[in-house]
Structure formats: C-alpha cells, structure tokens
Length: 441
Image 1: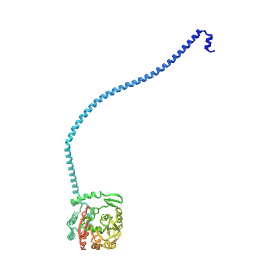
Image 2: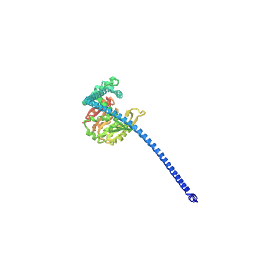
Image 3: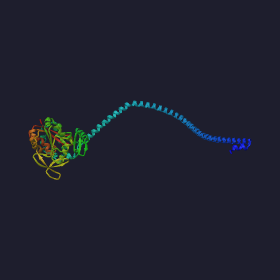
Image 4: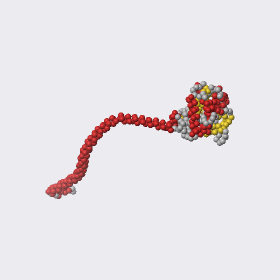
C-alpha cells in the first residue's frame, strides 16, 4: 500500500497536515541549500574577477607611474633639445662666417696652387735635364768590338788622312758630320781606354730617353714563341731600333722610290727575318732573303708565318764572292764566317748574287746587306747586278775598318754613278749600325 493511501486510511487529518508541512519544509531547505551553493560559486567567480581587476589596476597604476616618469624625462629632453637647437643655430652662424672668410681666401688659394703647379713643371724639366746631362757612354760591347776590329788602330795610323779623304769625298755635309763625329769619338775612346765617357750630345741624349720608353716597354709577350711590337711579330724578343725605327736608313733615300717599289729586294744577311718585315711593304715584287745557319733560318721562317708574309723567298745560303761552301758559327744570334770547323759550326753553301739573279731571273731595285764584315766579298759577287741594274744599296759599313773606309771607294771604282750618304741610326752606340747608302740618279 502506498504511503499516501496508508495515511489517509489509518492516520487522522492532523497527522496528515503535519506530515505535509514537514515535506514542504524539507523541500524549502533543499532549495535554500541549492541557492547557497550557487551563491558560493558566484562569490568564488566574483573573487577571481576581483583579483584580476586588482591586477589590472596594479598594472595600470604602474603604467601611469612610468608615464609620469616618461613625461618628466620628455620635459627635460625638450629643454635639452631647445639648448641643442640654440647651439646648432649658433654653429650655423659661425659656419656662415667661416664660409664667407673661405670664399674671400679662395682666389689666393687658386693663385698659390697655380704657382705650385708651375714650380712642379719646372722641377720636372730640371730633373729631366739633369737625367739627360748625366747620361754617359758606357757600351762595353762596342768598346771591345771597335778595339778588336781595327778601329782603334785606324784612327791613330799614319794613313788615316788618305783613307778619310777617300771616304768623305763627294759626301753631303750631314754625312761628313756623321763621319767626323764617329771618328772623333773613337779617338777619345782610344785615348781614354776607360768607360764611361761623356761624349753624347743633347739631341742624342733626348733620343735615348725616347728609346728607353719605346724599347722594350712597348714589346708585348704574346707567348714564349711570339713577341709583338706595333704591327710586327717575332718568335724571339729581338726588336732592334736600327730595323724597326731607322729601317736600315730607308727613310734617308732621296730618289729611286718608284724603281725600288717596282723591283725585287735582296736581303743579304736575313738573320731572323726582321728586316723582311720593313722591306716587304716596299715592293710590288718579292723580297729574297738569305741566311746561312739553320738556327736563324728556322726563326726566319717562323717570322714569315707570324706576320703572314707572302712575298718573301727564304734561302738557306750565304752570299759571297764565289760559289762553294764555308763554315759558319752563331754567337748571340749573329751568324759569322769562320775558318775552323769546331763544335757548333755549320758547313753551308755559298753562292754569288749574280748567279742567283741570272738563274731566276730578277730585276733588283734594292739591296740591303748586313754580313758581319763580309760586305766586300758579297759586293764582288754582285758586281754584274749592281753595275747593270743600279739598285739602291743599304750597306752595313761598321763591322771593321776595311769596310768603313773601303766600301765607298770600291763602288766608286766601278763608275756606276752612285751618290753616297753615311747614316748613323738611333741607338746607344757611336759606330755600330752605321750604313752606307748609295743611289744612282
């Protein structure tokens, strides 16, 4: 039986009323308890929120304190800034005054700089002049060469007057001055027997300064087997002023230009082919170059290849008075005839120019020779060509006293009608590379 039914049946109404009130009280207590729990939760949350708010207030209070300090510093900085601006303004004023003063001084500074520049230029000229004045002859190689090849004896011998007069007879004034200068200097060398000697004139000293800038400063090493100077290339670094500056005296020619260009050219003593480089452009024919020794001949052929020379004929032979064979040796690239067949010498064929001209045949417009003292033998083997075709002659006359004094009289004896010049090119020597130039006009 349910409780309600039991109470209704067995309990009186008062009892039932009490019990009902008791249930209500219990329900109210439960409700109050629940509300208290909720209030505790709310108080707990409120306490947490309050703590957070207090933290925020604390941070805000600290921030406000920092802000106050920052404002204080800003205020102090503003005061410092005002002072700095005041100082800057004063400095700018001073700067304006300094600029004004500097502007007033600039013309004076310009004048001082101009004067200094003039003094520097003057000092350069003085130094240059001192350098020129101090330049002295100190060519030990040439000194020894002249001594051992008859020149010292020639300028002190009793027949100097006779030989000298035959040489200068008919020469132009410039050529005579050249001869006199060479012989005078050789006499000075013979007397002094010591180097250095102060024998150069000012013009020579200036030209030597030019040479020092030109050779070897302008020579480019392209490879171990190719060196370049201007448009010229050689397989070895051997660019000589007598070839590439003076061009063997070609610039001294006064006539026969058209004949020379139309005729073939003979290069007697071809060396490494350097002369061909300056002779090749002068002719519409060919350049026939003769070199006896293998070492130089191979270099000559290489020179032709490096410069793409197509109008040159290279002959490995010596030119002499008569055909045959002869022994040649090489020293410092120079080939020379010798009577011995020691180690290092080479037996080579010798031909005459007259035979070669007849065999090919050639119309010769110019002959250049540099044969280490064999010039007279060469001329005797070329007499027919010279007397019949009358080519321009560029002959080395410095290898010994016999050639220096004897080449001109030999050619005069053939009555070809040559006009002669003596030309000493630009180098550091006083006699070496002297050329006898002969033209028929």
